[in-house]
Length: 454
Ligand code: IN0
Image (cartoon, rainbow, N blue to C red):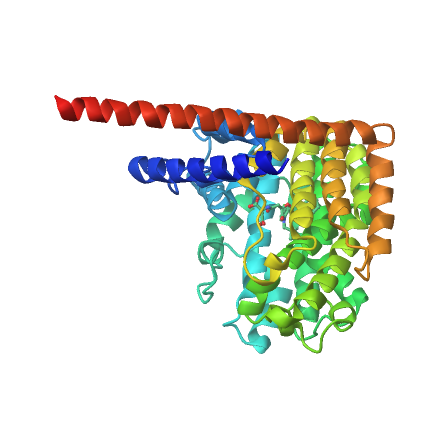
């Protein structure tokens, strides 16, 4: 066992050196592609991810979703899709997979929400200006010349050229416009309300997440129903739609602890972190790591409570494109939570899921069985990382059991067997790669010597 581990470690190191050299020589895929060689290396222990990455590399996003025909679009709509690509490349591909007028409605909804979110995030705008700006934001959708150029945020372009987005908004059918306007109005009011209040209680946390993400789920459900691509009932259960948003937003808040600290923002609720520290910023200090991780695990456990609602909401969807659109962010979120759980890296840097895993999840999340499979697999990873001494251990076990029961009742053993099989296959693949690498290395070295003699 030890020899196998040592062997694979040496192989891994050799391959890393080889790949990094190759990467430097070729400059392959640097920046302009969907992944680079380091992404491949990170997935070396997961052969199916390497395979999917290569497939994705060859076919690009078009391998996952059909290409949008940009030729028949107005210049302004084309610009909107360009902004969509700039703000969120992978999610843009997911939106493009939607059908007909729903696709444009969701694209515009997404950009309008980005603009509102960018306003909320702009720390350079003082409170007395920001609050009325947020509250009146929905009215800007009908003001053709309104733009905002005072933001210094990364996505400020959507505010600076808001007139292009609002022009396309005004071309949408009235049903879509009314839904988008109403959600922006509620969200702007909510954001203004929360501007000055710190997130103290769990209720504050839930309310904040409802305003910025739950309402998105509620608005999307209304758009799906209005387009006729989903049944009317999907609008009715706003609690389920809210949970879809809360699961995503809580995951973002947990993952972005350090980034938010560095930018002077705090979104972790005091009711939880107050049990482990005097100030939230303490968690960046090495000596506070055990307390920080306990707090982190409690929040992950809290976010996981939304998974049963996510299953129910997804099971109500009938249209395969709408299903994939909703399922992909959810499976990415559970993978992010699994990567964060019990991980001190949350307090030291960026926790990101492997690109290979992200591509694999995007390719797999096509139906309820696949989504449940993914949720169960990631939940099992969390289960394996639970430490008995963790203060939330029993609560985490409880939610893990609930998710597994809902996800895989009759199939638990198959998943465990599958993950073991994957491990063996990985070792085998890595070993084969080593052999190929070493043989090639010797062959090239010999060839070089022969040429030198000549
Ligand atoms: C979203 C959501 C989203 C998509 C599908 C169904 C949803 C149902 C309820 C609530 C939200 C739903 O998905 C995106 C995903 C996304 O943008 N991913 C980023 C990754 C990242 O880290 O930013 C990417 O680049 O791929 C999402 O996160 N939000 C969002 C915003 C608008 C719309 Cl129309 C849909 C943001 C948020 C705050 C979680 C709601």
